[in-house]
Image (cartoon, rainbow, N blue to C red; front, side):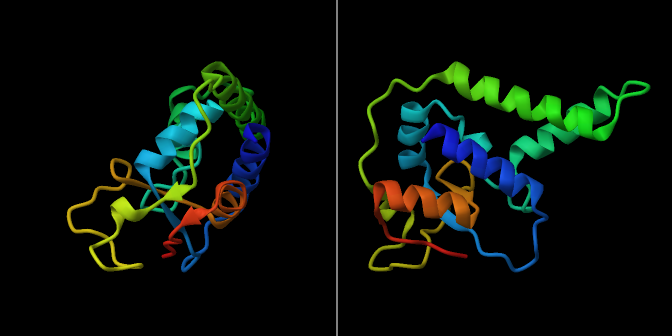
Length: 148
């Protein structure tokens, strides 16, 4: 499962973010359980509000700070991908598998689409690309599906 998700993350990182592209919301509480099971830090799958994954933003910042003469962008990207895989392997998971996805916490009372007031991105819920949602939904079921 972790290998599949890391492959999907890599594919999503290679694709340019398109204005109007759908994203999916997952309860942070459920996502933390999933992260504990797989060993994949949430920052690898969570999309920030500007549409760029945190891993990619961190890599870009590191690239600016670590520019070295003679080093190409593709070499730096390959090093970043390897670092991401190592960090995911270090976590190792080990937690129990999560139950089905439960997004009820983030929804307003009596709603299947409206979010509760006062929620914070990254603290109360994470935002994922469609490929990530599709894989998690197939494996765990649950919901409700919250698409934006």
